[in-house]
Length: 322
Ligand SMILES: [Zn+2]
Ligand SMILES: [Zn+2]
Image (cartoon, rainbow, N blue to C red; front, side, top):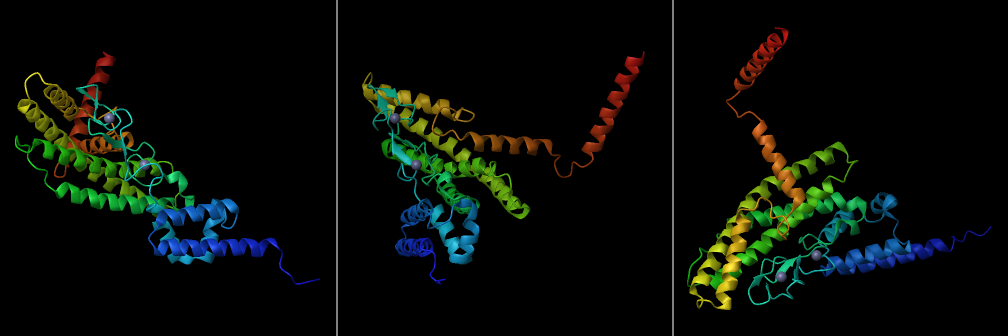
């Protein structure tokens, strides 16, 4: 019998080789989107195995270092539908208003809103990412977003002033969109982590810790968002006061101020692009957990409370008996 290899194998190996070469070239140019697109193409044509056999292939073909590089490439693959998590508002064609003076609720009159496909994160959805890379991808994205959020929170916003209210308003709007995009990354982490059911205990511990950091950072960022909205309200009030009485511009500025004031008092910004339901729920749970926990130095409070509860129960019991 001949020692010739089966014809399909060299073809698959050759295809895999060509794809790996293409990915290496794309990586060298920092083109992460192209790298991962080639990877997915390789999977689709069978040159790279499907998700369930990918771990072994990665180990054999690209090793630990190559796997980490690929995880980084998937982490930095941009969303296919937007630019940096934002898109021009479809509701108002990017004008920021309806008719002459009505606030556009979809974009809060900024003309730009978050991309619905990536929650404003700007990164490709986790469904595109092969299962083996999902935890590292979310970890890379989340850690980077936390660092960027921390840096953003340290940058002071300009105080609203009558002279610069238009320029300031643009700065507030920009800051709001950036903060919101980064919160979108945290929202994606909190959402996705709930869907991982079979993580090894050490990985689960790390992701749980990261979610805790997300919640702490998001709580601070949420205060920043509220403060930014407050400044937007003040700036638009000042714009209204400076505009010609009974003009369209005065009405529009007043309407904006009212909308922003309402949002400052809103609990979770439901119905707006600032709403991150899973993150908000996680923040609420953390708050409740904190309240339920006795404060340090209050160690005696618990037994005392328990004793009081026991004596109450005793009293009720004796009442029942009488
Ligand atoms: Zn709009
Ligand atoms: Zn997007």
